[in-house]
Amino acid sequence: MSRDVKNAFGALALAAVVAASAAGCQSKTGSAGPGVNNTSTTASAAGGSAPKTTPTTSPKTTPKTTASAPAAAKGLGGGTLIVGKDIQPGTYKAIATDTLGGYWERDKDTSGTTDSVLANDNVAQGEQAVITILPTDKAFKSSGFGGWVPAAGPSLTGGKLGGGTLIVGVDIQPGTYTATATASLGGYWEREKDTLGGTDSVLANDNVDAGAKATVTISASDKAFKSSGFGPWVKS
Image (cartoon, rainbow, N blue to C red; front, top):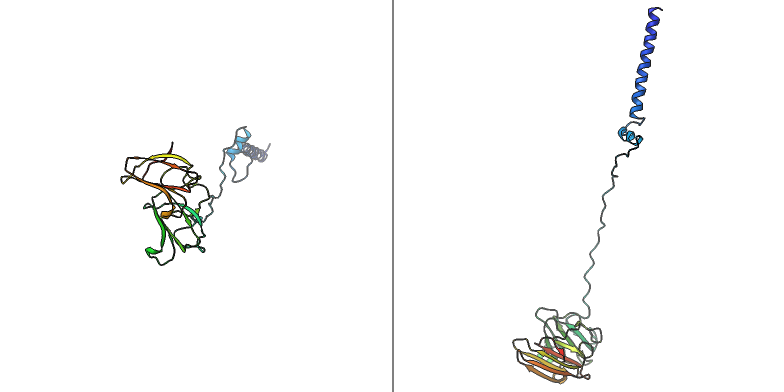
C-alpha cells in the first residue's frame, strides 16, 4: 500500500475518533438548548427532582382609603335651643359627660337674665338629667352633656342606681331603698311628681349628713327620683 493511501486511511480514522468523542460529550450533558440549566435536566432524567424556583411577582399594593368621619353625637346637642324649632316640647334625658359636670335650664325668654330662668340644675359627671320642656317654654339651654334623647327610650344608666335623676319604672323600680351619704358635704335626695325641674315638682326631699344612712320609699305614682352625694341605692 502506498504512503498516500496510508495517510488517507489515517486521516479518516482520526476524524471518526473525533466525531465519536463529540457524540459522547453531547449525550452526557444532555440536549438542552442554549441558556438552559443542564444540571437540572440531568437530575430530572436520573429520577431526582429539579431545584425549586420562586416565581417573581409584583409587590402587593394596599389601596388608599379615606378615613370615615366620626359618628355624629347621639341626640340633640348643647347650647341654646329654641323650643318648637330646634327642639320639640317633651321629656328628654342625657348623661353629663364633662369633667365639671353638666348644667341645664328652661327659659321663658332669650334675654339671658336670671328672670328668664324657669328651672335649672347642675348634674355631676356620669349622672343623668331628665327634663320636661313645655310648649310655652321659649328656649332650652345646656352644656356638658351628651346628646339629649327622648326619655321614653332605653335606659341610659346601665342599671346603676347611683346619683342623678332616675325615671321610675325605667331606671329604678318602685320600692324602699337605702344608701349611705358618701360626699363630704353629705347627701340630698328627692321624690318628684314630674320632671319640670321646679320646686313644685318635689313630693318629698331630705338632706343627709356625711356617713349617715338614708331610707326612701318610691311609689309607683312617682315620676322620678333624684339624689346626689350617696353611694349606690340598694332595695330593701
